[in-house]
Image (cartoon, rainbow, N blue to C red; front, top):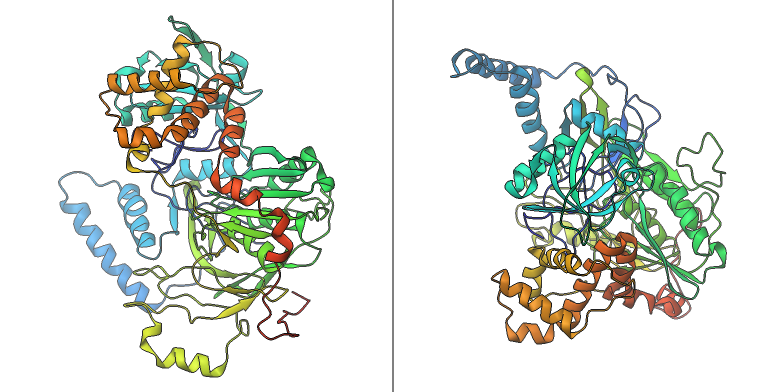
Amino acid sequence: MCRSQIVLRRLGVALDGPVGCARLRPFALNPSWPSLTLKEAFQHSARPFRWILSGSGALLLAATLTAQAQAPAAPSVDATEEASKFAQVYGVLDENYMDTVKPDQAILEGAVRGMLSALDPFSAFFNRDQFDLLQQQARGEALGFGSVLYVQTGKVVVLQTAEGSPAWRAGLGPGDEIVQVNGTRINRLDFNSLIELLQRSRSQRVRLGVIHPGKLVAQDFALDPAEVALPTVDKTLMLAPGIGYIHCTGFEQKTAQELADAVARLGGPSLKGLLLDLRDNHGGMVDSAIGVAGLFLKPDQLVLTVRSRAQPEKSYRTVARGPADPQDHAGSPPSEFDFPMIVLVNENTASAAEVVASALQEHDRALIVGEPTFGKGVVESVMGLSEKTGLALTTAQYFTPSGRSIQRPLPGTALAEVDAATVGKGDQTQAHLGQQLADPRSRNAGTTTALARVFHTDDGRPVTAGGGITPDVVVPARSLDPWAAFLSQRGVFTTFASDYLTLHSRVDPNFEPDSKVLENFREFLTRERMRAPEEYWSKDQDYLKLRIKTEIITLAHGLDAANEVEVRNDPQVQKAATLFPKISSLLTAPEVNPGTRHKRCASK
């Protein structure tokens, strides 16, 4: 997907800018902050601010923040001197700039954001609107209409509406094309203007002109915004008899309960296996991550340890508490699921999602399959400031149960050097350590990386630190040739599906594209002035049929039906499903010396 499409995964989640993806995903009619790269928040009980794990995407808040954080200590002498220089620069700016300078824009939006970005990619300043949205997302809801939209220049199509939402009550559904918003015609706007129009419309009464599938005349609708729930478990299905599949988009206050409910719908403890898909999961609250881990781990098992300069080291463990326990801020039911598990990850699996994956890996509870993860192992704190603004600041580092860090070094930032492990953790001989210190080749050019250390799971399987989680079984994602990638990036399949449904208002749920549909698609490409190279057209037949089917099912029957089509035809899911009979052997540590095995302390 390129600049002509927006892809986001949950009902009511804000626009976060163009992203690449193999298949179009929903855009929701809600506010955004394109510059942020934060995803998660978790509660810290000792102070009136919140600690967060920061991945990529939007920032989620653990709870309502206080207006003012604990009074900071007096700045150092050096800081005071530098602040006086800044005051001098601002004085010159205020007096001599060609136009009147707005202090909030120059200082908060300019200087503060610049100062934070100079530290690392995860620290950020939130203005009032951003901070308000932050709190909405922490509650698992957002102000909007509950519509998941396909958006490209000149075209907006409804993919799904949340049950009970304003769009659902108005009768909008998959395949409806929005042609007018508050009197402005969609086809007259460029992409940026279209996005701005949608964002402005999300928080006030809106009038829409909508054409239903198979119709030619638009119908008028009036919608009032409301709080819309944001589910984090978005895909649940049976892959095979006894084998369940669940995809989780993030970790919020209600995620552990959502996941427990999804498992129960699939069969609960009677399942023969569960594939938990954490691909493209940027994270969330640490309490939620611990609650999710607690569904599958034993009570009192270590999930992660947080260490910072300003706060004492703290460990987080699973607990066996009921959902009604007021002390259970993760809201998770007791651990009760012991069926075999596979966790699917990729390069966009980050932060709290990595916390869950690493805990399940290091306690030998699940087989990790897919591609290496993002590598986000530092913690941010969210502090409420005056004027209902907020600040996220990197304040700590977290470590997995074995004591390793998964933070990848980020050259040119404060995270260019990171600790490989907690003190006393990891297995290193003194000779090996001395060799690392003496050999300059053990360091990357320009940066100091973590020393190569080997860690072990409970049963002795080796795992390494510094740069994400390496899967136990590496399975690459689907590889597209240049032509197929071009078609996906241009949103061609969804546009064709919309045109197809204009002529075929009824499509069976078991719809399968045949040779006639493919020929229609080829004619569509010709009308759009896109060439179909014969060398690609022939070998891409299966992929073309899958994409056409997925997008037509999306518009005709909604995202849930299309998601099942997509999941069942996903090569990583297909490969992972074949590994269930091999889990026991794959989770067995290799015995370097017969009769011996390394095991970590059982207290872990």
